[in-house]
Length: 157
Image (tube, rainbow, N blue to C red; front, side, top):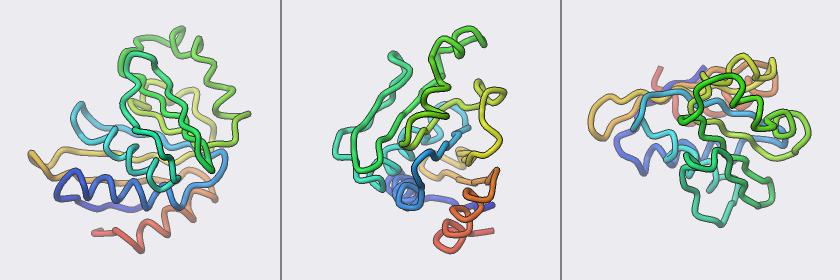
């Protein structure tokens, strides 16, 4: 597990960038945190770390945005979904089990029952207007290696 406090959005994006540089094909990152906690900012950083050239924005209305890069990014935003039927209609299985990019899910608690056994959970908490506490928990051996690298870079445990 890692934990750090960022002082501004740029620092939150930097945490995401470092995370993106350590992800691997088939990675699933489940983001939790209240509205305005920096989830999309973190995803923008992950995209930078994956060398995605496109502008990354919240897919709130389309639910899933796909970004091409050396390792594609599949960005889910489940904020507007209300029930399991809506989640099932997304075709999430294709992204979780068949695509070879990185899946990042905002509002991941809504899909927790559908996540595979191995994934990375990142929680963002608002400390104050600009500060965010970011903590990560690994589920699975591959993700524990990612967490070890993040601990070395950012841990303020």
